[in-house]
Amino acid sequence: MKTLVLEKPGKLSLVEHPSPTKPGRGEVLARVRRIGVCGTDIHAFHGRQPFFEYPRILGHELAVEIEAVGPGIDPGRIGQLCTVEPYLACGKCFACERGRTNCCENMQVLGVHVDGGMSERFLLPASHCHCHPDLSADKLALVEMLAIGCHAVERAAVQSGEQVLVIGAGPIGLSVVQFVAAAGAHPSVLDIHAGRLELCQTKFGVKRVLNAGEENIPERLRELCGGALPTVVFDATGNQRSMEAAFQYPAHGGRLVFVGLFPGNVSLEDPNFHRRELTLLASRNALSQDFPRILDLIASGHIDTSSWITHRASLDEVPQCFEGWTRPESGVLKAMIDL
Image 1 (spheres, rainbow, N blue to C red):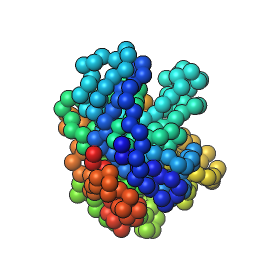
Image 2 (cartoon, one colour):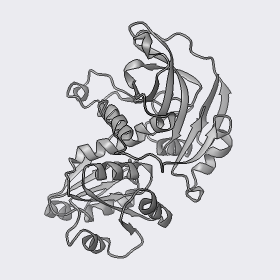
Image 3 (cartoon, rainbow, N blue to C red):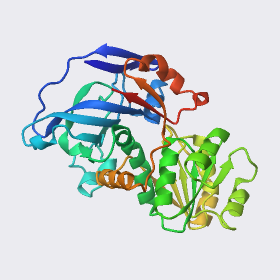
Image 4 (cartoon, rainbow, N blue to C red):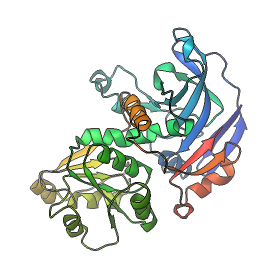
């Protein structure tokens, strides 16, 4: 079967691998139908992804069709089209025992710590395949990305009517925007790219945007938010300078949530942090229960996925076009691999 292997930074190769045939107990044999390309894949391609080893089969934003089931799994699942929950938690550590499986001490994420789904077929735990009969493969492949935003908004306990700032208008930032809006809060978006800000307004209905090149961002925020700073700020950039600047933006008593990951140290000005009595939160991955909720929100129309996919390629074409997808000037929001 055809498989894409990231052999080392900058080298993505299409190779032939043996096809798995017989799922074990609790497993399914999944035929991959769609693969979303995400920031993690791009960071790994450029050699900037922490917790990563080469060679690796990428791919954790997936839509799959169940072709066979192992012992203990209902044969009626054969033929189901599913999204994949790519977080393999141990179920035994302190975090898992408290229901915090998203930050399992022994976490293995498909396509990061273990091989993922950039292949024609692979074996999966049946419990990690979530289906909805009314959703297409394209929509199912977007669910994991949306789950990152969903979990971040839940973690921040965003309330209806709150003023919220999202920093970074990439896929993760925009997934946060969608769940902020679904919670009844009022999002503003800050980014350095004018094209991304225009996309926020025209495709995602964000009325208030700020360019990071403007002077005095806190004052502009007060103007947009009715005189006060936002009570919740999400930084989805994974950029050190942005994350450090983000401490200026929450209101006194507010919350700052780091959704993006920076592989290094982030510093803060302690007097400013204490004066505002800020709550600082990290948000990692998502919980299993987020996936069925997102499926229902998409099916009901409360989450609109129509604007996400901007680029497509077949598995055979990916080695030639992947590097181009990583360039900001390509205009990629979400590239999708079709099988």
